[in-house]
Length: 168
Image 1: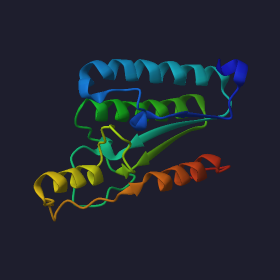
Image 2 (image 1 turned 30 degrees about the horizontal axis):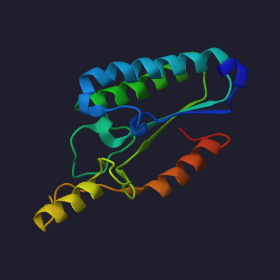
Image 3 (image 1 turned 135 degrees about the vertical axis):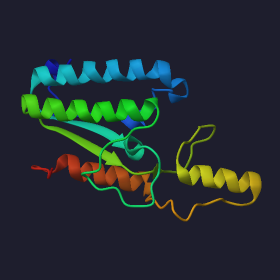
Image 4 (image 1 turned 30 degrees about the vertical axis):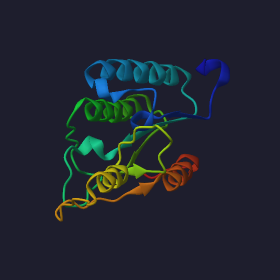
């Protein structure tokens, strides 16, 4: 498929792919990893275009009170976070070993307007749900984090992906 269509950009939705059900994470990690490896391997055979892997803050494990720098060591907690961290590492290895144009975009706490009857997993949704159930929102003053609205995340991704020579 990659040879016949020769895409300029290939985006692997990673952390935001709704085809994976992380409620059954032990089984899903196998499907996720094999699907990712099949796509990345096919991309590496063609050796043209840009491959984009979407990741999230989950690769850093438990929330912290400080900002996370680019040099921060990954410390995933849970199967989904491990799969995302492995994906980032695999992308890095392919980029180094084969000189491929591979980009990892990691977004912090993306939120949006929830769809009807859709389960959401972001801090904004959890806080709103807690407020509806208990009439209050619990917070920890030592746990500070940024939130990114879905439309803004899409715009940032577009700008990064279309950059001729992206910064590392």
